[in-house]
Length: 305
Image (cartoon, rainbow, N blue to C red):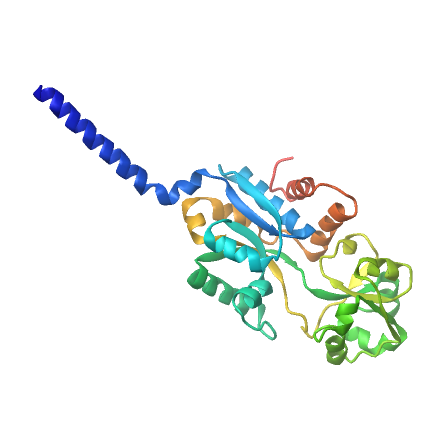
């Protein structure tokens, strides 16, 4: 009888110890679940989300779930990141600096902005920025290739002397907004021969057809990967920069050894033109973003073919 009681007591103690062990592991239990990746509602982000997923799953034992096209972008993804609904997502430096931290991005040095992002995201949100992909998705002036060659246009300042011979095409909101065409003209001293209001969806076609000589665009527009166009360098640094990186929760990094190293593989792998080309393959050629992402990672030697 005494032996039976002792055995029962030992079993009770063992049960308590197992229960305590299970409780102790609760904070890191998430390590066994899929990592949740969010993306904004744009082709570029769909491709980047797939790159992150494929690299993580290839280089670690973790699986991933990608939620594509979160409406509202940063303003809705960040609260979901804070609540733990998502673990990581691709973000742009000036978006984080302005929309999340509430700072004015004008005039700040890129490195100073980066260091401030690292510091404040860690202190305020317990999140980290891991690496920079290399490309910068910001506003730009895009000139038809033959026009750029005719007038030897490389920088926005080069355009000043010949602007009165050229026709500028733009979507209406860029013409009207305070930080749009008016500010560009004021900064660089442009006086165009004519300014035409053109729907955003046909700007590149209008330029290719010769209806206009140059347009406003974004540095990773899909059409930049296929048409004979030149993006003028913003040599007076009027436009703030939007370098892309991965924002990830600190507790996710802590509970997933090797994740940071996998994310760092994205560091410096994309130029503006390369990102634009990938966007073109999805938007214009109709390829699947997962296939486009994989092919590029294989090309870069980050995945096996």
